[in-house]
Image (cartoon, rainbow, N blue to C red; front, side):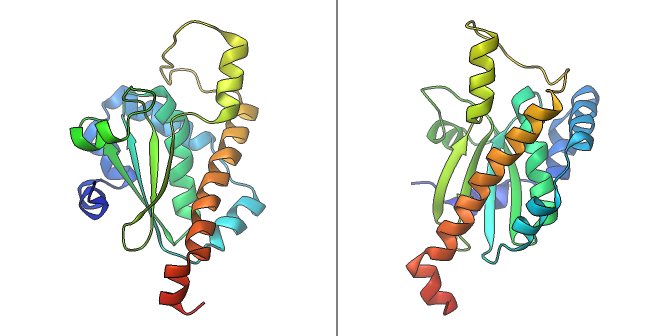
Length: 187
C-alpha cells in the first residue's frame, strides 16, 4: 500500500516541478500552453466553492505532450481553489508509485491521484479524457506520441478542461459526502 502522505511530501509544486525537470524547450511549451488556458466564471465559482482540503498528486513528465496539454489546466484549477493542493511527481522519481499507477500495463501519464485531507486515496484518473480518445480515434488508428509542439484546437482544450474539472468536482463531492469526514467536520 502506498503512503500517499510521503509521496505528496516528495512531490513538487507546479513551478518547482518545471524548474527541476523541464529543459528550456519543454518549459517554453508548458508556458505557451498555460497561457492558452482560461477558466470561465462558472468554472472559477465551482472551484472557489470547494470546502474540503483536497491534495492532488499528479504523476507526469516534463517531456510529455499530454502532460503539457492537461497538467497546465490543473495549475489553473489550483490557482482558483484555495482548498486544492496540487503536487507533481516525475514519472520515474518513485518507481513503486509509477508501477502502482500503471494503466493497461503501461507507465502512462498524466495520472491524477485525488486524496483526502488525511491522505486517504479518494480515486485516481488519467491519462487522457474521453473526448481526447474520441478525437484520436477519428484521426488515427496507429500509435502516436504527442510532442506538445503544437497546441490542440481551442475547442478541444475547453472540452478537456471541462472533463477534468468534472473529475476534480467528483473528488470534492466524494470528500464532502464522506461520512468519516462529515463526522470529523460536523457537517
